[in-house]
Image 1 (cartoon, rainbow, N blue to C red):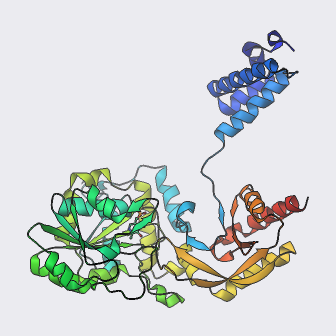
Image 2 (cartoon, rainbow, N blue to C red; image 1 turned 90 degrees about the horizontal axis):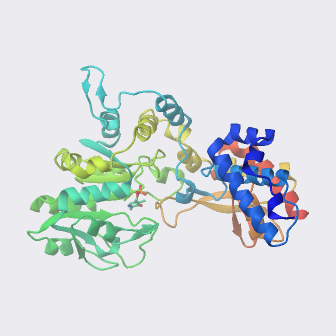
Image 3 (tube, protein in one colour; image 1 turned 180 degrees about the vertical axis):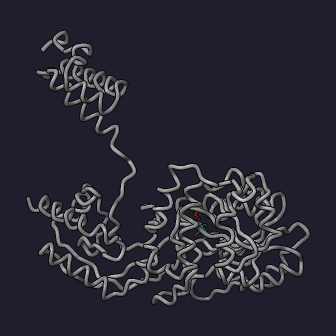
Length: 452
Ligand SMILES: *Cc1c(COP(=O)(O)O)cnc(C)c1O
């Protein structure tokens, strides 16, 4: 076949198939695809391949268009047993939070408009009273995420001066987020106090000087400090802070509003406890144990929080309206006492081992393959390191576990599972009930590929 026998763009444009591609994908994109496929065809002919007909070019163009325009963000099935999986978007929202987002996102809303006076309002007013009622704090501020909350707190209170922190808390949280780096970024000078395993109150007392602006306490996140260790209690840090007029910033990370100890787990530090202990600023994420949208919540003493609110950086870190819409509903679930019923994250944590086993058995029965075995789920999201919830897993024996995991990821929706002692295991605890059917269909299809 010669290059001259290739169809021209103009002749391709006359064809009905091209017209239907244009209807679907628009003229410009379709032209780009046709040209790219003609280039490929020319290349092919030069390399000796024959037969590049119009049909050939058109099916090439359609494949390209489908690939270019396939949605990149997709719902997936989390069968890993990690409840707050950062790579899988952390907390799924409640149905009510989702409804609020879809209702408010396509309309104008009173985001910064006071309906009573008809004048300008503030975006935080919609949720401030909910947070303060829940936590007992004087006031609250919401920013884009918890990293931003910590950065804003340090910048507004300690820029150009010193911030003290225990050496045991200079941790890396994941995704390259390191507490000392964020502290340095704020323009504060980090003063490391104590040792890696033991830091005493006296270490802080002797580190305080006239340049000290802030004492920082950070949750260890997914790191466990065990053995011959000690750290000062928050109450004690607050009391020496008070003596020198130095506020305390407590970065809780996940920040629970409910006591995880009620669900057979260890006790994750609670926001209410830090507020009661007198921390001037308490920061935590919206999409970890809170179970809401990505956000950074800052609660605490009015005098300190107001300095953050007025700082020019606050404007650059502010949350968007959809985040606030979801956050308002999420916080409402706690106030109504329905968090464990309505918030997926807490429903998963509260799910009794028996109920999980029932689901695993039902899956085994539906698939007529696999074995139900004991296993462990984890909370994740930098909370409760080393703590697990007893669970049941569906374990499947396949010849090539890695290839099977890949096959599961190829399903629609993709299924994310893991390998344990050479078997593929799926944890029902983190699978949303409305996804059970899709999961079974995906598994059936992956299994049929695996045997063929
Ligand atoms: C997760 C975490 C952060 C960061 O929170 P993001 O909401 O992801 O920005 C900061 N500090 C601690 C201790 C954390 O666990």
